[in-house]
Image 1 (spheres, helix red, strand yellow):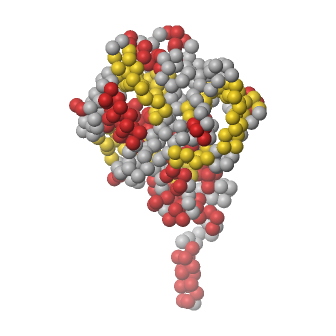
Image 2: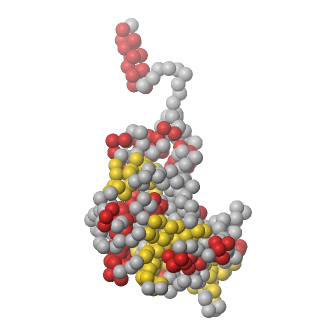
Image 3: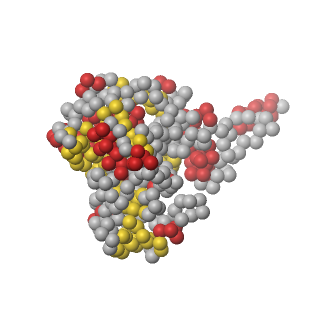
Length: 439
C-alpha cells in the first residue's frame, strides 16, 4: 500500500500538478521555438505585464503569427522576427535587392526618392526625380489595392530576381530598364553640401539610415565621421539634416552623430535615459554627451516625414533640450521605444536561427520627454518634392528650411500647399525592413 502511495506522489511531482481540472496544452517539438519566444518575451519585453498568461502555441501556424498574437497591440507596432544574419547585415548596410526608394507627389505620380550608389539601380545610373510610369509592363495605377495602398509585386529581395521599369526622365524622355536584384553595400549619406545663403554657410545633409561601418570598434559610422569633418572644415553656420526617408537603425550611430552636434559647453550632460521593463530595472541606464570635433550650433533644422522614425526621433528628442530644433515637412512616425536582439539569451532561438527583436526599452530626454507615440509634430508642414534632385532649392522642404534660416518663418504658400500622402514607403514594410526601407 505504501508503495502505491509513493508512486502516486512521484507521478504528481513529475507532472507538476495533479489537479484533474487542469489540462495544459502539450508542447510539441514544433512549438519549442514559440515557447522560447514567449519565455524570452516574459523576461525582456518592455510590456511584459501585458503578455497573456496562457499563450496558445498550437493555433498559430508560424512563429510570426504567434508573436503577433501575444504583443501589446495598443502600442506595439514594432516587434518582429528575423534571422541572425539578416539582422546583423542590415545594421552594417549589407543589402540585397534593386537598391532604391520611392515617394509619391501631390498628383500621385511615383518617383524614385533615393538610390544607393553601389546597388544594381545605382550602378545603372538611376536618379532621384525619375518618374516611374510602368513596372513590368503595367502602369503604376494598376498596382493600386482596394485599401488605397500599392502592391508592386517586385518579389523578395533575393539576388537574381529581375524587374523591368519604365521611367520618364526630367527632360521628358522615357527609358526602360531591366534590373537584376543583387547583394550590395548600401550608403547612408545620400547628399552633403554647403549652401551659401546671404553670407551664411548652411550645411545640408541627407541621411537615409543609421548604419554602422562593419569592423569598427566601438560601433560607429565612417560615413558620419567623414560628413561631420567635411562640415567642420567648411565652417558651417547652420545645418539642415534631411531625415525624410530615415526609418532608424543603430542607436550607437545616433549617439555618434549627437556627439558631433552637441555644443562643447554641453558635453558630459545627459543625452537620454534608457528604461527597461519591471523585471530588468537594475539594467536601467543613461547616456551622456561626449563632444567630438568643433561644430557648435545653436539650432538645427530637420526635414522630416512620417517615414522619420526610431533613431531619427531619438536625435530630435535628445537634442531639443540643448538647442533650437525645428521640424519642416510632416509629423514623424512615433517610436519612442527600441529593441535589441534576444537570440543570444536563448539557445533554442539561437540554434534555430530565429532572431527575436521585440521592444525592450524606452528612452527619455534630459527633460523626461518620453512618450511620443503620435510622433513629433512638424513646426511647418510642407509637401515632399520627390521629382527634385537632392540639394536643389526647388525642393519644397529644402526651400522652406532655407526660408526659416533666412527669415525665421516659412511662407504661407508653402504650408498651404501641403499634401499628406495616405500611403508611404514605410507602410510597405514590416519589422527589420521597415527600419531600413528600400526595394
